[in-house]
Length: 244
Length: 268
Image (cartoon, rainbow over the protein chains, first blue to last red):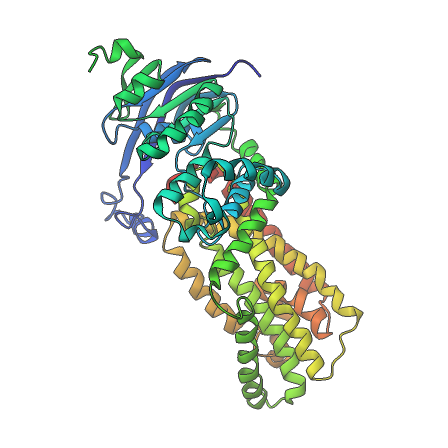
């Protein structure tokens, strides 16, 4: 194992749009006779087009760009959810992703049981997951609600549990979607310290965001995506020169 | 490291399976959760499965014994074993179709071996079987039949069914994610299979055709379990057929999984 780093070369992701236009078995079968061939032409969205970059240990990278630029897709590709159709991707180091904190939460289970379940998702044993629970319960500060089913939580409580769950890790490479930094002010004050620890503890941070104050505060480098391609890549001061 | 030029599909699918089985605790927790969700707030909970099967057995047992001119004491215990084993098989097949599409939210949000979901389906099936199989014993006792040690010969059949359930869940889960027309096709095939397989009718009723029955994969797999339960045992032909079909299922599922595993996230 070498030093923690991310290297992408000509990375491409394409989304075939299968079910919006019933690209079904019928079309497959009828296509053979020639009449429907034109209709059967694949509708493909090129989500990432030949990205090349290298992120070294210690870098905190902000992915910025308009909606649909490919920020989330790139995060998911780095997380190992999407396999590229072309190009190479090397990730050296343990990856932790904060993409959707509520994914995998079971509304019928109590907060505490959900913590254990999340531990299982991460490949822990029940024992290790239960140990994890004590620390998370402390932070989430849900009081006796922690032993009630999650479906009875207010949305704020859900976010608190989700945040506490998601941030209970210490990866080398941290992938983050911006909502993690967009809680209510009261909670963020408490979350701040924990998030700082997580971010500074990891060797590489990649965060997808629209919020330039977040970029200035947390990041050292900006990659601007547009239409699935990199249009700018460099230090924060260079890509966002105007202090506003 | 991932290189689209050399995707190393075989190694990746192998790794998926290994990691999936390493997370059996997760699969077990999810399977239990599935059952819980299904019977949320219900008093009898999963026992409803047992109750509804029992009611169906009573109704069909008496009617069909009359239709087939068989004594109820002979027909009903046989039907109990038959119907419960079939229900197991049919439910596993039906649920296999949604193995992956039902967890779309998870598949697109976190990296997780896909085989965990197939393992979850198998364990969920096992949980349901644990609620239904004892009913066979109950019916046997009611009709004064004491099951002998020969009943234990059903265990290898159950094990084979579990293995088949795993690969079927993986294969159908993927195919149904890609082609949304497959689940209704599977549903109608299963309905047809119910009638052409000796579930309600005894195999000997087709007389000369009985020798051909092992060609039906559902019959073969089912008979490895039902045969020992009803005391007729499973013949070598039945086992050979069941093993052959299972091998075929595994080969197709493994090949499909290896080739298309990387595409699943785009399909769901």
